[in-house]
Length: 309
Image (tube, rainbow, N blue to C red; front, side, top):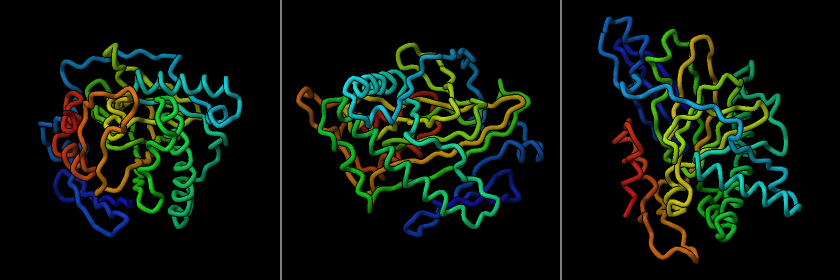
């Protein structure tokens, strides 16, 4: 997916999105700076931190980090330990950090000459796809499912991978302004690369109901569970409720890859030996995405209710 942005005469940016099949979609996105220049006093709610929301965050040094080298190794004990951490991370946060088998240092995703930008992104996406397949197979094993239970929905010829580059400039009043409002991803998995260690990403702990600041080692990627995987796992893993916060003197760059089956595909909870009741129903991927975009933004995780029995 390619995305270009132009500034209109109003207080909006016009984003034109071109999908792989050539279809074009245009979105008008309100921009805080433009609103301020035009003297508009009422800032859109999507940019405001809810009044009851607090900065009650807790940095955790025990945020689950998975070694792909150990996960792919023949060492049974090492693999079981990584599977345990995978289950812990997806269970508590809906996301984990992964340390790839090969380092991502020096990856040229910001070339001086933009002419090779597509080549670089496609190369990165190819390697990222291999990583996502490995994670989905490991997750299926951790849930006592067939190894290909999730991967089979990812036919190489029809799977969809959308890329989005995020930039968050420094903000003079971070306590009043959100970088990205709380949300879940309408994906199976999202793979996130951050180009520095400035932080800014926060995730809600499912049981403690508290925002955690996600630590970011410079040799790790973030794997985020999306709503579609929650449906397919019958809620055994749940999508993460996460947000991006702004910072006074730090900017933040990130590259997100969103992995999905084709829009026309139907997904449903995968049958397992210990599943007698299903909490989720069969949905069409494209229908669910339309629903999520229609109801967003929300103050809580409500979009997924569309797929619940």
